[in-house]
Image (cartoon, rainbow, N blue to C red; front, side, top):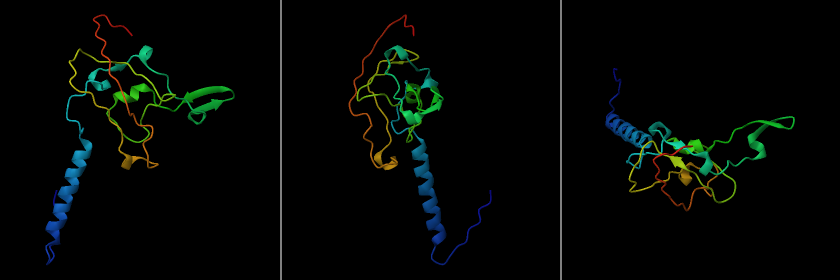
Length: 149
């Protein structure tokens, strides 16, 4: 691909190239996983949600598409959304109340040394707050050889 540039007397072409390089580096960083460790709790890594150990979804009246007195579908994402690497506003799992639980079955046995939870920063929030973000969490390990859903 040929680049067409104009060189001015003050060297603004070099400055523009430096700015483009900085922007390219920032975009690359934004696309990377900032934790930089293996994520075993991804659907693409074979993880799945165990519904018997997971809270129900939060359902508001505005999420439903009613037909007479029947609810045809609910637009709220379920707990499976937490197994995706997509951390964007609105792409979250809501459950009723202030306490909930989720049971994740990993594809293989691991020896965890750390657990991370990702959430959007307040700067990405549409309404300027992240009050519903996870504040406290506990991790329990259940090791079984014959685990069935």
